Image (tube, rainbow, N blue to C red):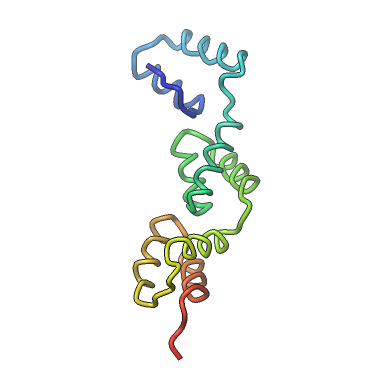
Length: 137
C-alpha cells in the first residue's frame, strides 16, 4: 500500500484515510513510524526541497510543491530558504548555461518559457536571459 518513497506524514495519513483505515489506527501507525525514525517530516522536506532546487526549479515552485504535499507554508518557506545554496537568479543562469550553451539569441523565447515553467519570476527570467544571451548592438 505504501511504497518506499519520500513521504510527509500528511501524505501517509491521507493515503490511509482514503483506504478506510480508522483514525486511531492511523495515528498508531504514524507514531510507530516516528518512534522508529522511519518518518521525519523535516528531513523529508529538506530532501524534497534539495532535489527540486537541484533540478533548477525556483524557490517559489519548490515551496508550492511542499505545500501541495501538506506542509505548512511558513515551514516550507523556511526549509527552502535554509536549503537553497543559490539565489533564483543564479539557478536560472545555471539552467540556461546547461541547456543553452551555444547562447543562440534565437533560443531566447524558448529559454524564457522554460524558466517560466520552472516557476521563476519575470524579473529573474529577464535578468538571466539578458546576461546569458548576447544582446544585439
